[in-house]
Length: 372
Image (tube, rainbow, N blue to C red; front, side):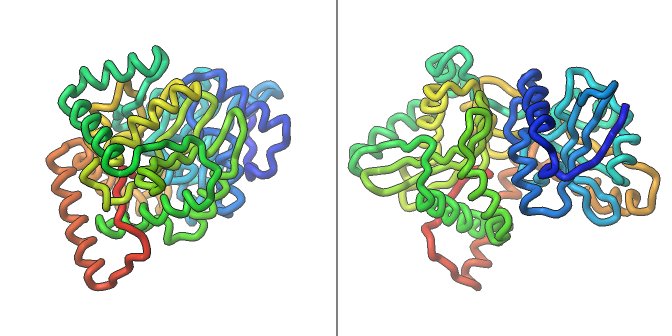
């Protein structure tokens, strides 16, 4: 077995084609964050992006995209922005994990959304969590029946609000896979305000993340695309979402809505309409990501499993990294796994956000909300 490390941009057509072939052959890898297009886009914007190419007998058997930071600290490609990572490889490929780190010049590799059960990483998994999905393999109506079974009261309430919304605000219409840059700017403005309002870090304050979103929005291929959706009331945009898709899976990424219309629950109305359009577009599922909002529990009709864990090689850098990261990761898992603690933490962050806003008012866009 031979492991070589290159930048994604340096992969040739043969390597990129092989990457896509391996990804399509394994249903557990059907996630756009595992696509070669995402790796190449990240490499355009970040100097620390690398990919290990694994060969056996002269044939490529796997790819391992990752980020290499100072002191050999390894992170999943896209880090906190992504909800899935791992090896893109032939089924059941098992590589000596520490040999892989050595070839990648990494002292440690932390993961928290790894495709669960990959033989290379399975011995290092410390926790496995469900990521809820909307499953359309039996059709949209079958999914909707499951949602109704999960919580008939919630579905009835949202459908009532949806009808009222359309009746009182000039009718509802939905844009699927919009190429409109202005719609994207509107969504990102809502999301930035939502981050600040709820006491969280505004991801879009980092220009490279905005540039990444723009690059993804411009992607249009059968195997990989950015998907912008927008719900309108009359001629006014009221809720939207930007995510990534493969041929069969859409991953939830950045949802938000205009809180001027909060009484109509536009975010959930949008999600129901997005689900219908996704099914009509031939998608098999929408991956909503692990943890977070309670609405996922009643919109889900299945789950995927993702793992947390850590691999390290003996070094001072790895020891320091463990001290700094492991307690935080455990605390985060405890909080996100318990709805009462999650709601309490969310209230604290929102209180901080209100205080920060009162000190530094910044309201160029309407106040949004969303899940990520």
